Amino acid sequence: MSSLSSRAANAAARPFTPSILETSAGSAEHGPAAPSSAAVASQASAWRDEMQARAPWAMKPAAIIRPMPRYEQMLSRFADFNAGHFACRNAAFQNAASLASGIPLELDGNLVVRGDPAQPGSTELAVRTLGPRLGLSDGAIRSALEQDDGPELEKTRTYARVFELAEQRDRRPVPRAVVPRIRLQGPKISRALTTEWFARRVEDRYRSCLSKVERGRSAS
Image (cartoon, rainbow, N blue to C red; front, side, top):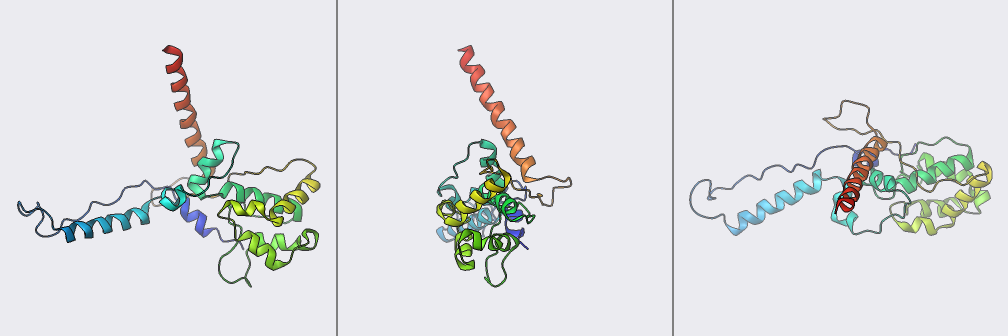
């Protein structure tokens, strides 16, 4: 089965609230002397580790500087912020693979299970059944799916042919972005909240801000 854990963990709705740094002996708390450079460096390191551990996946610097997915709707960008880079693109590919193969798939945005290639996930297995029609080996399919965290996936034959087969079978255009169906998990979540709920809440606030800007321009 396709692993849901990585994106579900990224989708956990938790506020970014790094803990307060502990002060070391000899700091201003105990006297007028300023903290030593070693203490400051130690505190900075602890704070950095805390931020990296608690900040949402998409807030990490490596994610911010990476190429942005080309989506037509802002909703998909907001969903990616919650579920992970290219999650909507990947969920759309899973939808296309399901249509083309006739195999139901969980649209979680996780295309491949990292680790042992001998134990493929559900998405990879579904695409493998299309192998003869795609003209691709199992190895070539896995190699393509391993590009699920960047734009390179869209340049592969696997990506292009799966969508072609899906559209031939469905007889209509297949979406290139689908909001992943991930249930949010966290210590403060008591309701059945999803990535779609998160994305639509953000989109509502985004549109509200745009409306305020337009009203301000009209009034000036």
